Structure formats: C-alpha cells, structure tokens
Length: 82
Image (cartoon, rainbow, N blue to C red; front, side, top):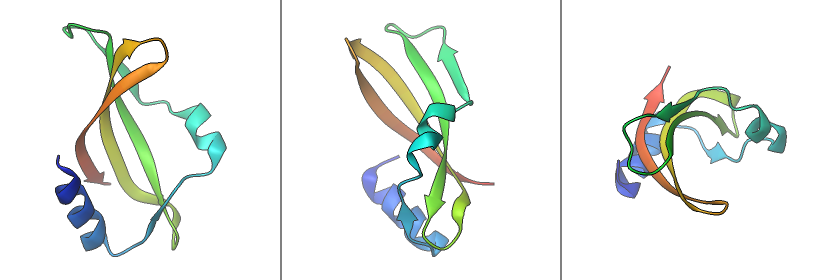
C-alpha cells in the first residue's frame, strides 16, 4: 500500500486519525512471526484511533523486518475496516 493509497483510504473513512494512547503500544497482541522470511520479520495488526471515536474500526496491517539492533523496516500492507 502506498502512502497516497493510505491517505486516500483514511480520508474516505471520514474521521481524523490520531496517535493512540501510549499504553496501546505495549499491548499489541496480533503479532505473527513470518517463517519464510530471509531476515526475521513479523506480521502485525495495529488498531487505529480517531479524534471522533477513540479506538476505531480501522486496523493497519504491517510487516516489521529486523535490520539490526533495535531498528526495523516497516512495510504497510493494508488498511482494514472491521
């Protein structure tokens, strides 16, 4: 998913995205290690938050890939409306 596609999908949703409360990042549960990756990588689902709703129906699907140390490449795969 490109940055433009993500921006357009969020705009069509009709709400203003905002950063989730800090504790949310400590409790992400939907993390699956990808077994066939050349470097360690994980599929991660992250609930998004909006100004209007708080926790929204939007979920961002990411792939995090280790690059060394505490650095990761981040790829956005999809934006889901549940």
